[in-house]
Image (tube, rainbow, N blue to C red):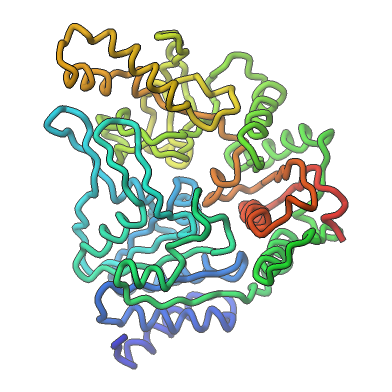
Length: 482
């Protein structure tokens, strides 16, 4: 990379000035690397910031944002999920968007159905900072909504960023966390792969030194132990220290309801999460919360938290107050009003008003939800059931004659476009990834010695690092503790 020594020095001084403590050795290396990155004139320039929990990634990124703004630049902050974007926005003190909301747009194709593609990147000489990059996968996924092609989020992100003249990229993440679903590692944090596949000029800084102030946290102390165990490849029972730690504790099933009630009172529903291994367990916890703690009696009520489990571009297409057309897989909404319930084609539906949990200032909007899996163990509606529903709806449009006209009408039908949703107080770890909550409860399920492998340790590490203030370990056996 080509840079001016004077410019690099000035950037280093500005960065260091935004740290409230003396930077660790790793943060010092990162400051120097970011200075060279900032001054580089190389094309397709990127830097990866990989690091353990508690090593000061967020502090460093927050300082970077401040310095870039002092230079008159306005970086673009992105994250894979709404919850992750909300966390990023809180520490960077600048608006953050989900990747999907920022880089994709829809328009009507010639047949009247939604067409899906990349938005134009109209920015020049802009730094794009992407947090939780371990979640960005190469898998090609298709969204319901008509006209949607299989696309790779990583490919599209790279194409979008570097289509802007002079734009550069910062990828931030922890490669010990779970990789994207269906993948064995996180490609966006693999320097060699990113250089090979996208012709990037890329450097990597790995932060391993836990900031001294963070080691007072029992959550981070034990997460750091897990991280070291993952790095050394030791496949054995992790050993947690909870005695003398004020922010981490063991609880059993008899204590769970009282613990959740207290956490809701102290932190609010939005800041409490139960992370578990399976959709079946998550469903059981969600039902317990609705019926025993919140005293909800019907299948869907105002105040219910719903997670979208399939991308949908229909309902926001004409909502002017929301700066996106996408209700993305993983987005959490809160029901503000149930307008009506009805059955059609043998399926239960509800017409409701909702708001984004991570962006209530965008206001309330109306959607239709398909209630088929709301109280089931299924993660989404099976493809065969979607096909049956599509065929049943098509019967209502048989009078249109041609197959193309019938298909167009089906794709625009509100019942076909009804959101697939699950309750969202308890989540699997993949669904929770990228988010943070003040209070987290981890349910490991049934664990034997054979269960413990590197993948399971990464699951546990990811779950640990979702907690900000307090962490409860539910029904963990004595084998896990000193």
